[in-house]
Length: 64
Image 1 (cartoon, one colour):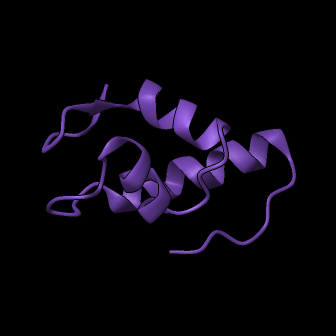
Image 2 (cartoon, one colour):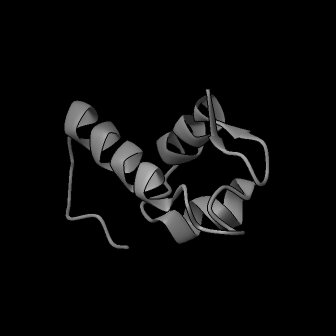
């Protein structure tokens, strides 16, 4: 599923970026471009970060 239409970034790519340590939507944008243009997907990106850490533990408060 595409998460960021502006840059053609899929949920799979975002999941990998988060698994590799991204904890903010800004870090995701720097790593793969998602959320770097119009910003409509940033809410989804933050939800994906929260979901990742809820499942995988070590969830600290996510910065926006």
